[in-house]
Image 1 (cartoon, rainbow, N blue to C red):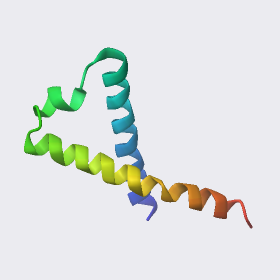
Image 2: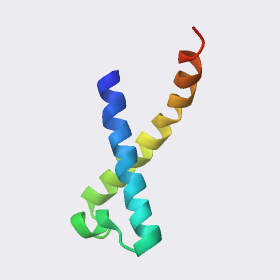
Image 3: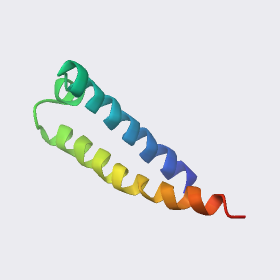
Image 4: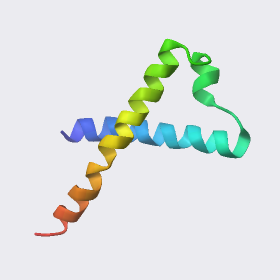
Length: 68
């Protein structure tokens, strides 16, 4: 489970960096690397989105980790 957490957290960070680039520089790194809405770029966007939804569970784990 810990390995999955690290993989998904890495995808969330990649998504955050990409959104930062879009917001500050109007530069979409995923689009530049993988094409404008190509199947690969759509898979990456979907994986980042699913990772973000999974990351919501971190809040519950942080709270329960503090309750020894």
